[in-house]
Amino acid sequence: MSDVCVVTGGGSGMGLSAARQMPKDKIIIVSGRTMSKLEKAVEQLKEGGHEAYACTCDTSDRESVKKLVEFAASTDMGKLEEKEGGSMLAYAAEKRVGTPEELGFAIATVADERNGYLAGVDVLVDGGSTNGKNFRK
Image (cartoon, rainbow, N blue to C red):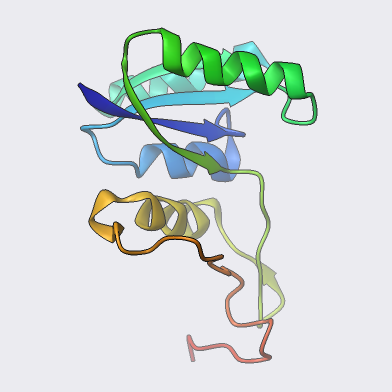
C-alpha cells in the first residue's frame, strides 16, 4: 500500500510544483477549487510518472475539507500520510518572490519520509528575509 500525499492548491503554481517534486512512490491527490485546473495538473503529473488524482476542495469550507479527507481515506489508494499546503508565499531578502520550484522543493523535502525525525516544527521558507539576511550571496 502506497502513501498518499494531498497537495492543496495543487492545480497550478507552488502547489503543482510541490506535487511534481514528490517521490514517485507516493500517490498524489491534487486539490483546489477548479476541476479543469486539477485535471490538467493530474495529466502533467501522470506524464511525469506519478500516480495522481484530483479532488475539488475549498480549504476555507470545513465540509469541503472533510470530503477531501474522506476521498483520500476511502478510495483504498493507500495510507493517508501527509497533507502539504501549496498555498503560501515567500519573499526573499533581495525583494523577490520565491519561485514555485523553490517552494515546491522545500515542501517536498519536508514531506520526504527520510525526514521522519523532523516533526512538530514550522519550516520558514522566506529566503532569509525574516532575519534580514540573504544567504545566497
